[in-house]
Length: 441
Length: 73
Image (tube, rainbow over all chains, first blue to last red):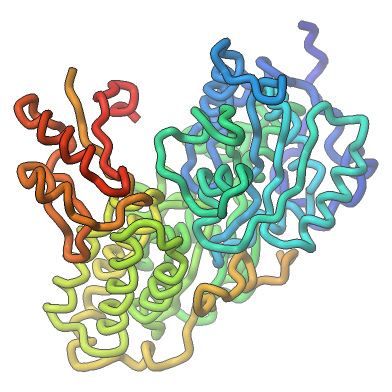
């Protein structure tokens, strides 16, 4: 295969998040140039780049591409309506209420994401791709972008609106929905890459991951690795909210100290108390640990949290971490799909106990109850919603242990004051980035 | 061939039959849903496990061959 000269990619940031939206295919081509690597060569290059999934799990993107590519070529694959091949799902649903990075990326660089969708679909021999989002307005704009590309893309891309629910963006829930069911998780295994949409091997990939694939096709793995650190190469989008001067979506070089990441959002008016890293599915870090942690999957894991989908919620001194956690847990309990008994029964009980700790009195009995309930829900759902709640609550009780002791005499002033985080109330409230203007920076 | 139990939590409706038939391996949580003491089924309990699987009204209890690939992931 002939290899054309590598086009020089942009040095430094931004890579994925241009300051103003790149509108139209012409402006997109001018900014990014033509795609270069495709198919097996692209899979090799993505593996070499060290790109990991940006949807939260940080799984190596190249390995995932390769495993679906191999399965889609297996002879035993069912032939349905005379066709074979894999299916690709680009996940832009972003049901985490504190995240707005996917909606920002899709608004500013829709064609870059679509390039990634088509390149990844080609690499895994997919005959159909779906771009899943949660808002009708978003879908209309993306469908117009898809229409612009007629004649360019060898794979049909269907823009699909998925009902808003916290667990709807879980990969098996997307498969379930595209197979005609409700957007709620399925029992796994089999995982989507084994048996997904119409029983085909299905690659589910976050839209930011796919935008990176589109850049790696053009500029190569070495360019990709020229930002970030060797254990976490490249850039990532983060959503910063809470007690910062300029909440919004930012693009960072992975591995940056969290201190510098928070500075991008204009710093804080008050002293930092703690950071909820990884969003509602993440863990609390006390100020000192948070500021010195490296903003990467490994860095935050070492600090006791996760980067997840890049969500950082900033709690100032004077705020009550127990109260903020109780509101998040109540929201998550309302988001249970209600399919699995331990989640359906256990999450509301955990929420009630956390509310007792935050707004009533946090006695030793209350804490033992949280511990027992967490043990009863962990690992017992079809999806990881109960595990996420157990993890969040455990981190809150660890980081805010002093508050727990103080709350034995009743709630602190912070708990009685205004909430710092705007948590959607109830199951019907609009999640997904509703705290931000879609395109803020 | 070694066998292991798995509960499909989506199908399970807390009838509790499994815990009655196989208390050696299954107990119930406060809401009546099964907790597996150990997924691994000793050979001497395999007939009882098979009976528990057959008796589940919602077919939520599964007896599967231990697959090395699955354990690794």
